[in-house]
Image 1 (tube, helix red, strand yellow):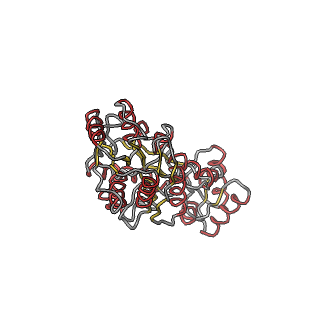
Image 2: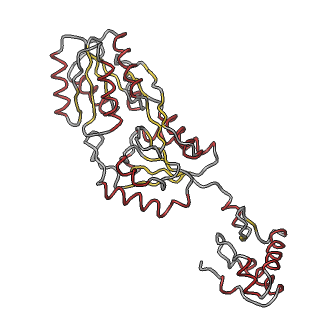
Image 3: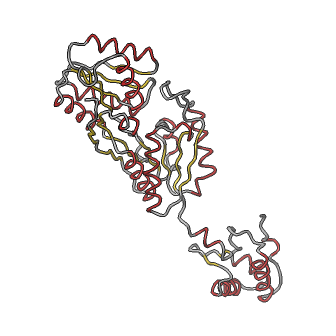
Length: 360
């Protein structure tokens, strides 16, 4: 609705009162638009600023207007909307591309928003995530397109939100260009080197140590690392941590990427040649689940001859009774939401949890 500011004209205090009554009765003033300031009303009605203020105050005292904390006057119906806390924004990949991890994280975000009485603005970006199926290599859009997507997001929403949670797929090289503009921004499920952002990720080093300790206690004599096809920072960080944790305990673990049935055949061929009992440590649940199915189809004895463990830990692994040295993703989402809403940013790493399964 266009502003009716130009129609607020007359002569004297009585005319100002009548104009305000007319606007409020007819509901012709935009609900979320403040009334003009006292200087404008004084000039428009030929009265002093003090007289204009007194009229506005009378209407406020009688409930015919509402005075906001910033001193501006609105129609009383605006109070219900303007006094609500601003929502928390979640800038994520498209909903249909969510992993099980994403769903568990969002349960935590939703729970925290409910506890803190905050609405949640869920913004899905089509540029962010590209993957034809769950096992195919995933990719993100070009840097220029990603930057334009955040520009669009800020243009529309920056004044209407209180904090933003960012999908782990947004790269630091894109986010770095928004220093001072992504207020109370928190990155999920990966570390960030940007000091103006918070992050909540898993403690990869602690998870890797937990996996190696479990392998030793379960009598495994060697380790192999299983990864999804394509680059994915949480998986890459975990693989590096597993290599470091295995040093001094096992020979250097080979790494296998799982992105097709040929990759599974290659892994199984390697496992058949091993004389020692080997633990396959997966850095991502989908790859671990597919590898487990391929091992069983090939007749490989799990866990007698080969064990499998995942260092992620979503329901994809738990429902298949895969041993997990991973993270509580619902807690991750809850902590990120509380951090973004509270505005006190830090870099937080959750401790891993060992959940023994049928595969070790």
